Image (tube, rainbow, N blue to C red; front, side, top):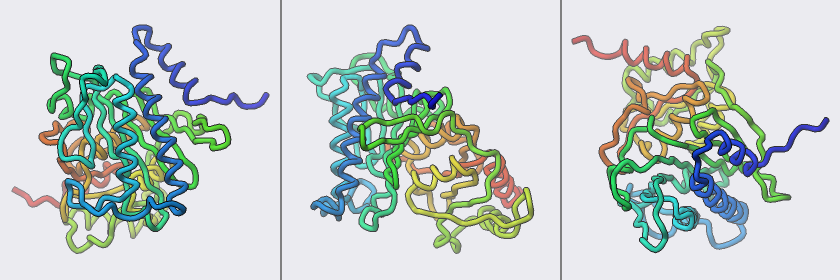
Amino acid sequence: MPPRIVTLERHITEQQKLHPAASGRFTGLLWEFVLAVKMIAREVRRAGLIDILGAAGHQNVHGEKVQKLDEYAQERIAEAMLNSGSVCAMASEETPDMIPIPREAGRGHYVFLFDPLDGSSNIDVNISIGTIFSIHRKITPGEEGTLQDCLQPGYKQLAAGYVLYGSSVMLVFTTGKGVHGFTLDPTVGEFLLSHPDLRMPPRGRIYSINEGNTASWDPGTAAYVKHLKEKNEADGRPYTLRYVGTLVADFHRTLINGGIFMYPAAPKPKLRLLYEAAPMAMIAEQARGRASTGSGRILDIVPTELHQKVPLIVGSADDVADYETFVRKARPKT
């Protein structure tokens, strides 16, 4: 008998049946997001053929050059969420403040946070890029969403996921019941379940870090990387370095093959808690991995601002635990 083909629609519908009280609004929100993703994927494939590559001519809130494809992804996702009528609050890595939700668009009980195009500095050189998203439930009274609704710790996320625009387009997400990966079949325009129940190996043999920052690393990180270059805990062989510079691509490899991704506190935190670290942390933990700042659980951090940055150490549970041990041992004795 041929394998059962499971589309994303069928998977979401079957998951919804597990929750008899579900209204379908959450499912509708996901469907609007998927439509936006398909449109972005189409433009990514055509990016070298039309006037969409290159910088847009201004900077985002972080002082980074905004790419034209960044703006397209931002507009498509924001538009899709407004069309869903299911969000009360929305914020993006690309905008300094919350994105307004017009009353006429309809307001629901969900908070949508997203990085529209992760790794956009890699666009012009045709390296994998991605989209990251996080969904919370509204926690404040009233119809209108507030900043408090956005500033929730990661352990309260209802869902989190990412899209990888690479040699194929993959959507990986969790609603708190495991992690599943879907690959877009361009011939039929459907996401098909290709990686059910993803789980990180407890230990890997690949590490991912920007070694251009070596001189600025804290002593614990420096000692840990030195250790990785000397041996692998399983067979005594050194770990292999792989670093793409797109969080989605580096995380996806780590999710599939195991290992560890590190963006430590020194020289300074770079990754945004709400749009990058917390969603990836939820996925990692649901896949039996681990996500840490180096000294504490990412999902326990209570955000204080929309664009708060944190260190991110994520990957196989044993590898992340080893990193925390090295950092702890390197701290000055008090």
